[in-house]
Length: 385
Image (cartoon, rainbow, N blue to C red; front, side, top):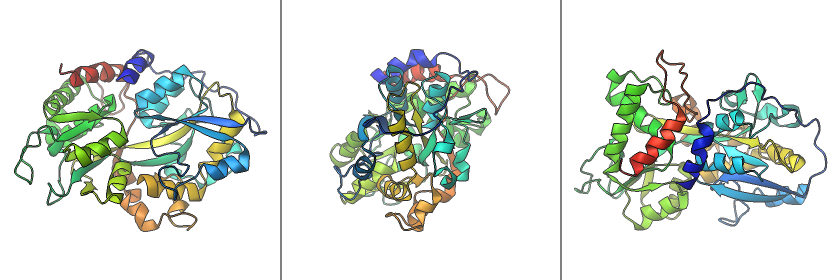
């Protein structure tokens, strides 16, 4: 929660992108000896968790750039860390990237220095969460869905709806879901409630879960307050959620494929599903701090991040989709085409990707509730208000 509070002030300022195109690096020179990265858990592996997954050691040997990683558990924590400074790169999701651009925390990327740029998925090259007025502020990394993870001993059949985490119900073992489900400890979870309401209260007229007028927003908060009575714990640490499913009786929650894969690897009784209401999701971009102390190593890492074998192995490890489509099929890594299909590679259009809510809406004429209110109100929801 500290990270949410620290970022609240920063994001209260209206998003404005004018005058953002600062000078770009013209060429990559000798490395400075290190690169400091803020990343999601599981995104930058050096074989310490599993020896088979290591895309850091070879990079360090080839470039002389030591990779230092600070794990962040929420987008708000990433924004807070980048505001503090001292980092070169961040693997930012769409609900953080535009805030970082508007806050002048990241700099434009000279894509001419990214030799593998042409291999990037065309659906991601100019994505609006990292491209503003034709200027690129990052290199696409990974994307994927927020899935519904469930205990297969409790659910004899895969749950069809997100109602198992939003409404009190009797589960397959004859017991209530109360106290046995989790929700994400981040304000962007408001969008999951809005997505649920798009199906179950169509009269609200929600067109985008990130663009909510006052009435739609109130309905989402009411649903989240209802969910509060069911939630045993709000999660933001992937490894704590894994432990909760193994040892604390949690049987259903929104999650990332990363947790699902690790639990399956331990032969735990879990599976995941895209519920009928659809899913939110994340498309993460490697972005460079405006005051990067190690820009040459940072550019070397951004190029390395598009290596097909890294993209392939990370896709397997995290259960996500590579930003380089060839990584699904070219055989340079562990991933195969069917694996990418299972991760949702063909469902790009079905995912409502995280983005930063602003007062200006494209989907309706009414003014929408900006993100700083999502932050303060979600703190209130978790606190029982």
